[in-house]
Figure 1 (cartoon, helix red, strand yellow):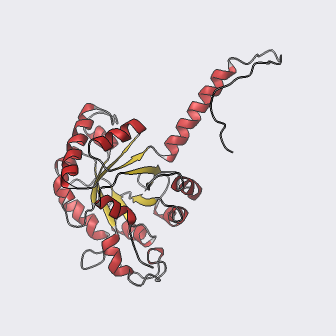
Figure 2: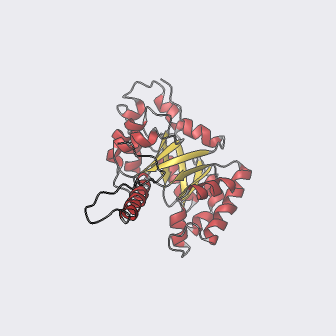
Figure 3: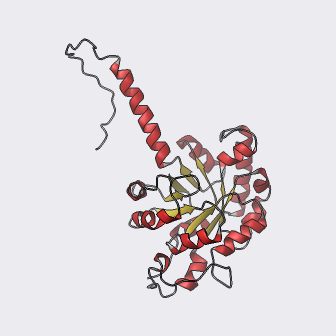
Length: 278
């Protein structure tokens, strides 16, 4: 069995990839999303109920699909990085990478010596329990390390971070960026858009993989238009909540047309929507 990270190779070719965002920690939901048509699925263990201890089951759930799993780490902690890699994660996002030194540290933590300082073990899911004969040689080349830029400092250092040895791409966190700029989570604020578009142009010209996450399909399309090449949309929890709110609002609106006196009505209410599968 050969080790091959199709997500990394697609990024390096700057293919346009549309991603999902997973937060619920449920292997069932991970399996549903991985079969929903996304190119990749970000497994968020920074801002969700999921943790590294959920990765084994979640990565297994996505394994039979054509969707690449990507893990967003909670920190730069080397023990957690080692655990995620041993569980079979091959592509990782790292939050709050503000400097070249921080970029170098996370890149080295993901690779075995002589290129890094990842701890060595043979018996784990990453090596398919020591059945991939060239795992320890291939892992260093196939792991994909993405630095998240979430502050003005990180945006200023973006091109230096991108060219740090072992960094395979950049990711702009628009929520944190907007907060650190004083715009309270408004990812559509003109200053946020301006900085993202400027970086998008640089990365497009330099051939550097650049990703982000956006809350609406329109903003996903905007990110692609300004030079981003891998973009996620919403999350499982966000999509579920939006669906619940839309449906309950629709039901309550339709209730206004239903008599309250117990008399049967012959009115057929048609919403034009497709019944949900259940």
